[in-house]
Image (cartoon, rainbow, N blue to C red; front, side, top):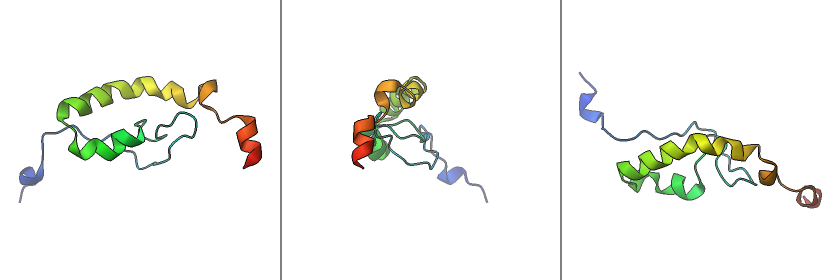
Amino acid sequence: MSDEIWSRAEVESPCTKVCVIHPGARICVGCLRTGDEIAGWSTMTPEARREIMAALPGRAPLLTARSARPSARRRAKS
């Protein structure tokens, strides 16, 4: 029996099952999407998904950018 019946020609999710939103960058450290992008993925058009997929590589530096790090003041209050 073939799985062709269940295959769909749509943009795959970039999810890596490491679902943690970075507190400074506000993107998932696993897939680099925003919370809104993750929540809306299943209802997005293929074009919208492709646009997000194209933007993801450029977001990786946001996770290490100095401006994305929580400030020492915020950490001290925790």
